[in-house]
Length: 183
Image 1: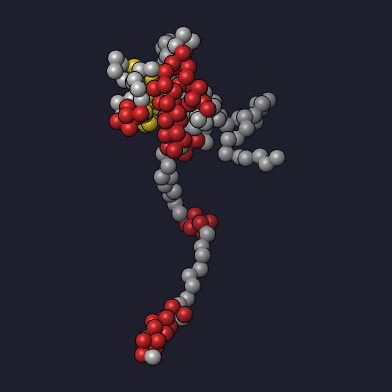
Image 2: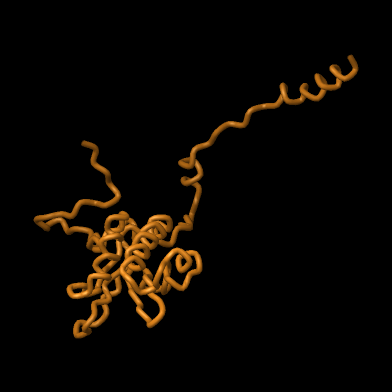
């Protein structure tokens, strides 16, 4: 009986507690002077971030946010996604032991195929959906396999154009990427 009484006495403060009100962020935003966005890639996803243009006479265009890189050595293959400011963001290589362990050879077409799948999965996990592709894959069948697996995995190999605010006299206006039309 004493045990039951002590249990009921322990539950008594829980019954009398007050429930805190839920507040919305709108009330907090009215009083804020500065808002800090903690996602550095947010403006790129909204397509309003600046793309570096480079120089007009350069052979390779620098107008990208994320670029696909393929590095081949005599022993390994590396597929990587490079950000224009921060360098390599995501990569997959046959140097990695879990990948190397599953492959027969590090240079054959199965390696390129699986690296494309792995890089696509890692890109989607890190929030990269669009990648700028400058690789000429007309003659190389292995590179074509990696690129098709990247596109099958959900990564687009072309970046969308940057959104520019239209002037009032513009005939055509771009669709705003942050507005979703329901059909």
